[in-house]
Every structure is written in structure tokens, then in C-alpha cells.
Amino acid sequence: MSRISASVGRSDNGTRQCHNLPADQSLVIGLLNRIGQAQGGRRENPLPTNVVRGAATTDLYQAILAFQRAQHLSVDGHVDPEQATLRRLDELAGAPTAAIRSTPTADLPDSIHRSANYVERRVHGVGIVGLGGPFRLDLDANGTRNFTMPRSRFNLSPDPFSGNAEVALTGIYPNEPQALAAVQSSVARRPGFVVYAHYRGPENIIFPTIMSATTTPALIRALQRALDEERQYAQAASSTLLQAFFTLAGLRYAPVVRAAPAAAVATDLQALRQTAQTLLRNQPAGRAVVNLAGAGEVSGAINLNPLVGQQVQAIPNLVRAGAEMVGEIFPAGSVSRIVANDVILGQVNWATTARGCFTALRSGGTVSIAPYAGQLAEHLEAIAAALRSAGFRNVAVEAGRFVTAIKP
Image 1 (cartoon, rainbow, N blue to C red):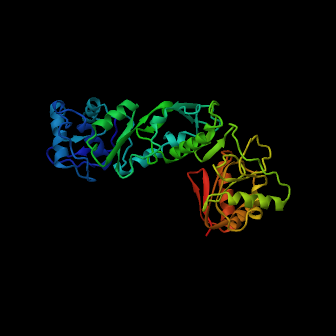
Image 2: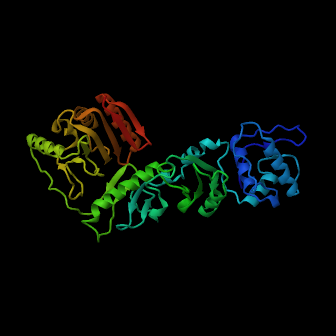
């Protein structure tokens, strides 16, 4: 049953004051607008969706009275939580369950996104089942619990919200068909507005009916990276099952063998520097990216990795050395961006590495470090502290998963 936090409307004799919270008014208006006139609703002549905190409009008040009369309910002009008028509205409108309570409509998407069951909080990684196949959504760090969804379910590009107003319907629908039906009947569907709703799908996960960079930004970024890697593998592994696994912060593991330049196996500092200089010259103008340690090599980046204890094949643009040597190997101010994905706690001395990053980066250069999930909070704090100590600015832990910083 739909829920409201307090009464909506006003007394038919003027003696009752209702709270008329905006979210509650929006829910009641939405229910009335989905019910036909023959049953006392306003589907043929929808109520305006704009509301004022603490005050029900005359139109809303009259609509409640008309509905109560048509349904032979107590005609009192207000809708109360869990009482007969709300229950009947719910029944006739096929309304969503588990509505967000006491949440202004404008804040609804953020409220749902903070739910532990929202898709971006439940999905730990993504993959592709076979070249050209559906997307795989992983519910644990190992990818052992997962389900697939067709690519067509995701708006990777362009984003339908671009240049349009975003309208999220109130509540979480029990399934996708009901959510889509509510969108279709919404009075907000008109040029310049993109309407969507939320529903419970596989594994009780909350999905938006439109998944794009607006509604699921981290998920779309991860899927886009999966597609980028797929395109690179396509020629070398067109008949091979693509078994790449991507966290929302970046690539975790890519076992597909692909053609790549021979790794540089240098044994002294001078040789390492020469290798780095050669690879820097091959970087696009203004884009000198260095990937440190871990896994999840960023496409096109120079990879600084000793490969100790790792089962990694054919890493391109490789300088075989530890992350701690970044400041010694790369000339000062020669790098525009440094990234690291899936670095295990204890694998890197961050104090030394942060100072080296500060040396190698040019002014305005950025750092983005996504450690492996184990002991995540402790690891994130250690990285952030090291970056601050090295002189970085705007050091921040993003989404509880990675650390970013800027060299002043």
C-alpha cells in the first residue's frame, strides 16, 4: 500500500488543518490522476502536479471530495495515512508499493539512490558475456553471483535527459511493467520533459526505468569501459569468450590475450627512464597517463608495474618497476594523470609513491586511486593521508571507493 506521512487536503467544514507535505500531496495527486472520471478520478482532466508545502489547492480539495462521493466513502475532504480513502485510491490506481515517505518530489531520486538496494549500491562489477553479448551485473567482488541484462536496457549514449527536464515519479513500483505503465500515464509526459520511475527487479534491486549517465552514472561509466575494452579485443579475440570483469571504479581482471608491444624488462634506473621517455613520446598530446600497480590497466596508459605475484599477460606499454619509483622514472612535470586500480593493502608504500606522483605530475594533474575491496576504509584513509602530506589539494574519497586529488 502507498504511504503518506500525514493528512492531505482540508476539512469539508474548515475545522481540520492537514499537514499537506509536498511528497504526500504529489502521491495523492498521482493516484487521482491515474483513476478514471467514472470512478471519481481525474485521469481525463488531470490535476496540476505543482504543490505548495502546507496548503492543498482548491482543485485538490474538490477532487478528494468528488472521489469520496463517487466511492461512497466518508466525505470529509482529506486523505489520511493508512485509512479508507488512501486504500481505495491505491486499489484503483494500481499504485506503487513502499513509497518514499516525507520526501519532497525534487529530492526523490537522491533518496532512492541512497537506498542499500539501489542498483549502483548492489552491483559490485560488470562484465560482458561473449563478444557482443549481454551485460553481466555482478553482486559480489568475485563475480560468482550475477545476472545478465540486454544492452538495449542501458542508454550509454546519448543520454535522453540531456537538454530535458528530469521528472521522477513518486514511489518504488513492485515490477517494471507497473512502473512503465505509470510513466505512460503521467501528466508530465510532454516535450522537454523525460519521465521515469523506479521498480524492484532481480534480486530485489531497485532500478530506474531509464538507466543513463543521469540516473546510474557509475554503472554507465563501468559499462562504457567494458565496451571500450571489448572493441580492443574484438579483432584479436573475435571467436573467444570475453571474460573481462570490471569494478565500478575500473577494470579488475582481463584474461583475454591480445596482441601488444613487448614488455620492457629493464634492470637499471637509466634503462627504466629511457623506456618511460619512449612511451611518453607515444602518448597523445596533452594526455600522458600512468597506471600504477594493481590491475585494471587504463586503455592506452603507461603501466608501471613490477608484476610480482600477479597472473597478468601481455600488459601493453609496460615499465616493470614499483609504484614507489614513479618520481624517479618519469621526468618532473611530464605526466597529466596518474591512476591505480585494485591495489591490495600493503602492496604499495603510499607515502613514497605520493611524493613521486607529485613530482611526476604537471600542475593541475590529477590522481585517482581505487584500492581493492579488502580493508577498504583503512586503505582509502592511508592513501588520502599520503596525498595530503605530499602536497596535493582537493584530496577526496569519492563514493567510498576511490581517492582523487589535484596537484596545485
